Amino acid sequence: MEKQTLLLKHNYRPAKNASENPPAIIMLHGFGSDENDLFSFANELPEKYAIISLKAPIRLEPYGNAWYNIYFDNSQGKFSDDEQAIASRELVSKCIDEVVEKYKVDKNNITLLGFSQGTILSFAVALSYPEKVKNVIGLSGYINEEILKEGYATNDFSNLKVYTSHGSVDQVIPVQWARKTEPFLKKLNIDCKYSEFPVGHGVAPQNFYELKSWLDKN
Image (tube, rainbow, N blue to C red; front, side, top):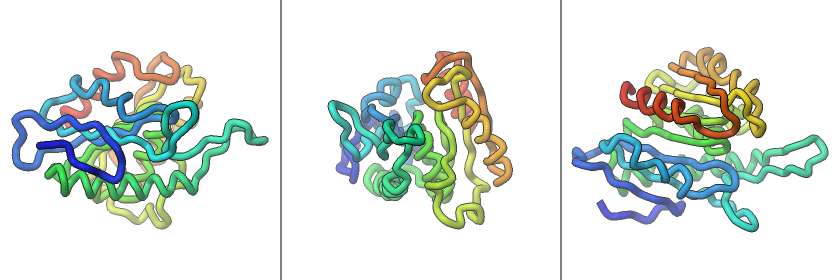
């Protein structure tokens, strides 16, 4: 399969020895990064998946991109632009449809893999449109209820599964925020595995092995 044109710039790795409709992993990078970041470990992920790493639409200076702006000079501390986040939520949702159509992947086997801001957005997409997402792998992020689609709690989450992890000494996103994820999801009867690792805002090697193992089973 040749690389296609989507609403967002992206990197693409085709599935190897693919059936007609392979499963897909769609990657959402963190604030200030780009489509090359998470894609750097695409070759460590199972070959049966097509991998699409999306580039966020908001350009930052001097470099990097974001799904929505974070204003660090806000008087109340950091402030996230929820309107931009909701716009990106809708954009990613449309990109999922494009990926299914243009890359001929299995629409019932889409995994969102996010880091930091990409995790926050992955949760927003999956909880707003669970019919489009089978798995979420959320690294170093949390759930922002303000950017979930109105009425999301009545959605059918019976096919959605979540693996989420956080660094216990994360200085960017407090671990206390991440610890709310599992109980939040379990209230919605969503299958969730939560892990912590003794690292900062990043992914420990043992974290990566665990998420791969989880993915193999789901």
